[in-house]
Each structure stands twice: as C-alpha cells, then as structure tokens.
Length: 344
Image (cartoon, rainbow, N blue to C red; front, side):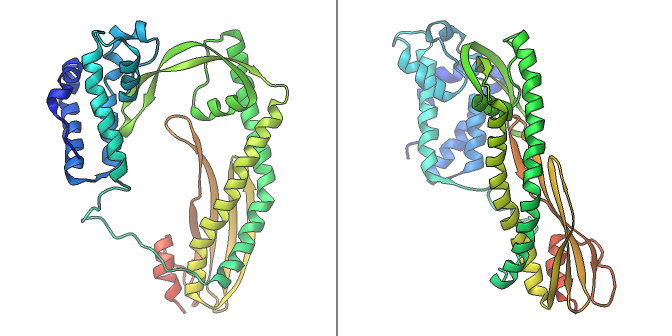
C-alpha cells in the first residue's frame, strides 16, 4: 500500500488549527505505519480517524454557504469536493482530506480486530466447555425464569418510554426547536412518529476517552401516530426476544461449566425473580455432596454516552457452601471454576 505523501495533504494541514496540527501529524504517522505493515488494529484506525475528523467542523466555513451541508468528517469533505466548483478556495484543503479519507477506507481491508496483546496483562480465565446434558438442565431453569419475566419487562419498559415520549412531545409541540436527546429516543421517534425535516442544528457529541466534538444534525417536526403506544410495545417486544436469547445462552454457558466440572449435580431451582427496568433472577444450585451456591443473573439496561440503550448480563455468586459446610470467600466466577469445582 502506498503511504501518504505529506505534500498531498499540505493544504489540509495548513487549514488545521495550530493546536491540533501535531495530533493530526501523529495520526497520519499511525496510518502510514499501518500502510507499511499491511495491517492495522481496529482500535488504532478508529482513534486516528477520530483525531483527524475532530477539527474539521470548524475548518470549512468558507464552503458551507455554497455546499449547503455539514462538513465535519473526511467523508463530508470528499462529498463537498465533488459538489463544489473545482476552483473553489476550499478545494485544496478538501482534496487533502480526500487523500486521508481514501487512505482510511483502504486500511479497512487489512484491519485486525481487537487490541494489541498486552504482555503484562493478567491471563483471562477461560473454563472448558460444558457437557450438553448439564447445559440442558440449566437451560430449562433459565428459560423458565426469563419466560416468566419478559411480559412484565415489556410492560414496564413500554410504560417508561411512553412517558418519556409524551414528555418530549409536550415540549416539542410548544417549541419545535426542542429535539430528542439520546439515540434511543431518536430511534423510537423514527418508529412511532411522522417526521418532517426543517433545518439543521449544531450538536456536541462525546467521543473517545471522554473527548467531545461538534457536528450538525437534521432537525425534525414530529407528529405522533395514533397507534404510537402499540408501536412502542412492539419495539420493546422485539428487544425482549433478543434479551431472552442472550439471557439463556450467556448464563447457561457460565453455569453449565461450573456444574459439569463439579459433578454430582442434584438440582437447580428458582428462589426469586424481580422485574422492572432490570430483570433479576436468583437460582439455588445444590449438589449431592452437600455443596451449594446461589447465583443472581441480571438483565441490566444501560445507556451509552450518546444515549443508545443496550443490555448487559452480569452474574454474581452468593452463599457458596463447600461439602464440609465451610463458606467459600470471594466467590468470583474464576474462583467458582478453580476452587469450588475441586471441593468434595
């Protein structure tokens, strides 16, 4: 792969604010290293792209009026370079941005996923695969737990988001310039409302390691559809079906490995289930030698820095008893697989 010639991006670098130029040069050096090596870590490419894009929003005011669109990334620069006249004053800098855009696009074909190995990192514990017969027994309890919880989970979250939408629409109806905050609300409104664009606005978004950057986004007039509550419920039901699958597969994998390695499995029973925006299912697993433990499996709904909702599935172990009646301290997943399974 051909490395970036700095003379091709000189006009772009000249347009970059002085306080960002060194960082841009470092990012370009990283891209050139990837081109030379024929591979680049996904995280490294993502960071370089964000560094290069960061100052662009404030660089092309000279082109905004004629381009009539946001220029806040190298991709926007590539589009603007095609649309604007060849003799436009912004073209030399835009063409430099196009070189960077094309380079980053070409590097996507040689991306290596994940971070580079850390030679000083503590080895990650990975238990062996569980026997299918054991998984089937654990699966049955987990499936029953999530099946009994999911309707209440859908009802709770439907009501929660309907209240959020109603509150937003009250403000938006009074002032159309009030726009939704957070990606989840934007997604829901795109499903439950008719949308008509009426302009753009400047917004600040969060980026890597707490950094922020400015961009422009389209503003809309929203009109709720008559069946919006049913549409919210349908969307929550769709999310819930994915949660059901992940809840069973993730937790069956964790627990099945422990139960199979320990041997002499006797029973697994649900002791408690609570449902709200979080599902919390408690199970007691007992063995024939008298050992036992309680496990709490949760579905926790979280929100990213940009307001997008996603589910996590944490597992914690409690009241872990050895065969001789002793209580095992600090029952982490690793200790359950290394210590508990070896006790008789």
